[in-house]
Image 1 (tube, one colour):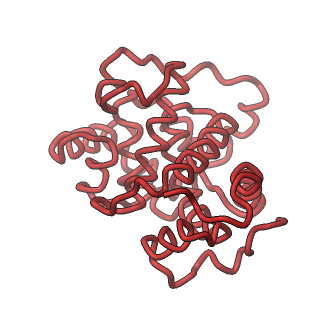
Image 2: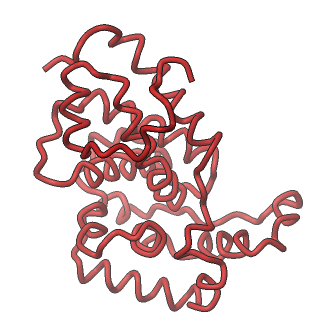
Amino acid sequence: MGEGIGVEIANSELSDDEVVTRVIEGETALFEILMRRYNRRLFRVTRSIVTNDLEAEDIVQDAYVRAYEHLNQFEGRARFSTWLTKIAIYEAYARVRRIDYRKVDSISLLEDQGLDMKSKERNPEQQIYDGELKMVLERAFDALPNDYKSVFMLREIEGLSTAETAECLEISEENAKTRLHRARALLQRELYSLAGANDNVAFQFLGERCDRMVARVFARILPRNRGRALDG
């Protein structure tokens, strides 16, 4: 993939904080570790907001670039994964509302502004895949009320704790629990269990898609930072 350092580093023993420190010190290529760790999570949570695969990929790419550009602002008060996920969520909401998310104080405010993202009718090409079990799950998910999608994606499919989910979405833990309970009821437990939501079947982001995301982000960040550390 050019200037990356290879798929084999996806399971690196380096912690997120260690990677961040070394990237800030000039080892830009190590940013690939973070991308490969969180590509799937960011894709899933952004897709839960925009309900379109290609746009979700584009948002994830922008989120990585923005995170890289502001890496020296990460202070370690929250997990890096939470900080990164929140950037992606803000990017996604901002994209849908066509606004600059940096001018918005909270994710909850974006939700409260009447964001309307109801699923559109599926075209004939999409209906071809309706026979596949994972597509049934994805359709059911897309039909959820907007407030429930991100909670369900982070808790049930990505496996984050209630506390982590609440922090990412800037809501209370009780609110996160309530949204998750209602999402489960609407989806019907037997449907998403059969579809393998807890086994990571749906909303995959593997192989070529993962490689493509890494390559695109490096194409944007390396030319500006070749041979030098990030500015402090």
